[in-house]
Image (cartoon, rainbow, N blue to C red; front, side, top):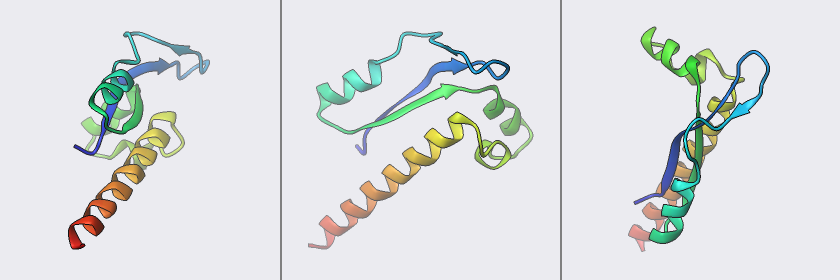
Length: 92
């Protein structure tokens, strides 16, 4: 297991930028601690992900400046680092 991420973690209003916690959050971080694995991050709800996905366009390309894109890119970087570390360990 590479780690745990928390999906649909809060919502940022696209008009005013106000953060709203729609669902209880913190469960991903708690589970990661209990399982002794990395916590990769929290991906917020973002309507752009739905609309761009429905259009067949990755949201990270269509909305590169959104908060969700920033989180997704950072998590992908962490996963890339972890898989490289695992590959290095397997070569030893």
